[in-house]
Image 1 (cartoon, rainbow, N blue to C red):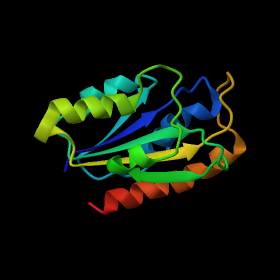
Image 2 (image 1 turned 120 degrees about the horizontal axis):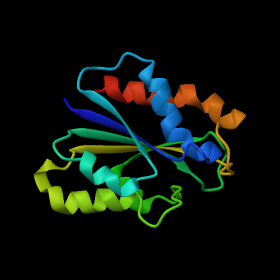
Image 3 (image 1 turned 180 degrees about the vertical axis):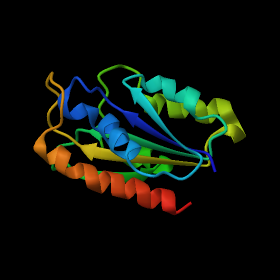
Image 4 (image 1 turned 90 degrees about the vertical axis):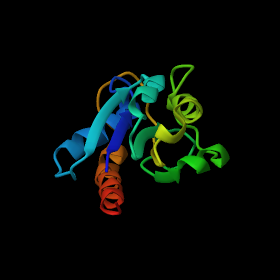
Length: 152
């Protein structure tokens, strides 16, 4: 099974880099064959180039919805439209636009399953590194993703 785990965010904007920090933690873990880690950074629309002929995609990104920093949200693609979560994008086009376009253009080559892991953040000020609460949430995010990989 071909699975891509895509980390999104900006390492130069504090907690916004959570998706990339999670990828760095996952790099230290044994992963099943067929799993690829992808650092998407802030190039949200580039997700379109990661979707074709992949069975499952897991996207990790920052959320700013007024919740408790470090809260982890897990959603399927079909739940995103109903979600009240505000995925952080400092640009006009984000990975959600890329997913929508991919769904329309790739047809049967679009992943059968898309899972989004959002982590509530607070600090997006210039600076490298996560706040204490976000650092503390890293193990639970990594654990959730590992559990998801074992499901397959």
